[in-house]
Image (cartoon, rainbow, N blue to C red; front, side, top):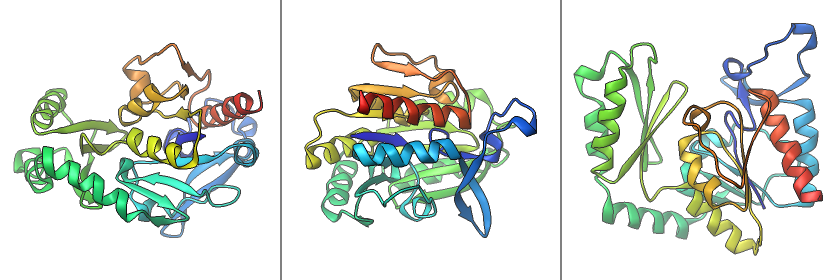
Length: 265
């Protein structure tokens, strides 16, 4: 089973391409997402072809912190995956529809050991944080994320937020301009393990770039991460983990190529 994060792992916004080359030498790209009538996310044409091949010889499971609605904007090549994990593991989609039993089990865990969502929203909504917290959003009533001004964001605020959240059973991740606060039971790893159990997968190959991906990578048989992102900034390594040589959209292509090579091998 191939379980891969999407944003900044397989697909990339224009601001995350990291193309340090002449325009004429840039790789051919395809649009992977349209938002409000405009192209928003991309992958290389080579990555698109590789992903189609990978899905033919393995079970490919997209894994994302995006909500269901945000995930449905993405147009991946090939047939629609039988399973997908969204909302950072809070939702398992089966044939495109949320699995009610899984959602109920996640909400029971959150309700029994974590501070309420409203408490975290109220904390992040404090007036003294308005200089760097520009927008605040709830994801499926499970976790909260904020659009932040990275230049105005104080480093000490992040450290204090991590401590505050940890004491309440929540975790923090900063990805680009998005700041996530997520209850600790809402994890990609648990959802990926459940999908692997359902399909009888005896081997899981995973890829991701953020701290929210780390448990999934740690529990995989083989893992990949790009040479950018939160995990790269944190210097995360493991014996079973391989880091790409490329950054940005070319790292996404490299990850799919490496995954396909392992499956075929």
